[in-house]
Amino acid sequence: EGLEEKRSVHEDLCLA
Image (tube, rainbow, N blue to C red; front, side):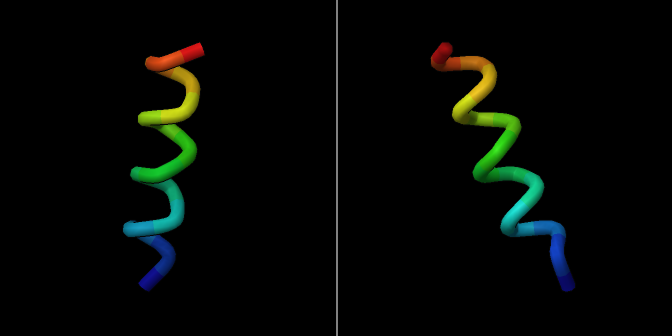
């Protein structure tokens, strides 16, 4: 649990 949310944040950072 919480992994999906962290993955979303990681993608956002990669996109930033």
